[in-house]
Amino acid sequence: MVDHSTPVRDVMTPAPITIGRAQTLSDAARRMHEHHIRHLPVLEGGYLFGILSERDIDLVESLPDVDPDAVKVEEAMTQDPYRVGPDVTVGEVVREMAAHKYGSAVVMHEGRVAGIFTTSDALNLLAAVLAPAAAPQAKSV
Image 1 (cartoon, one colour):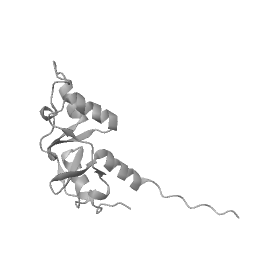
Image 2: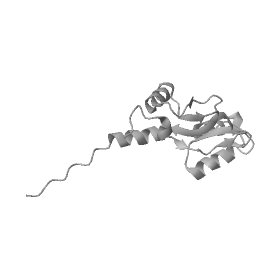
Image 3: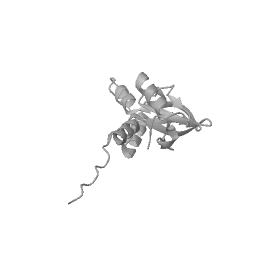
Image 4: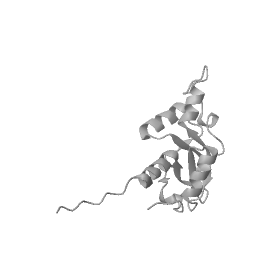
């Protein structure tokens, strides 16, 4: 059973899909669509430089005269994503995400991206906690 003291490593998405900062917004949108995800850690040489969300892409593409085939990921990404270590508890991560309205936490281990924990992951955990336990079967007499 998962509770507030569970390490985030136990519930994160390991080895998340990533993107390079020099790739285009079109590349990022395609990658998100193909993998049914809304957040991409942005890497350069294996190191985290930012995070790009579906919302970031939508915002930039809504600006006049923007060509998503020309705009680079680094121009739309958030440069300082919320980062946590794998041993940080789920309780601490979700409190920080809620307090600051973060859509994700990038899980880092030894300077590298180890996983990602998103609001979707948090909602899936909440749904599991709130699911009613199986009702005991009534015995026939």
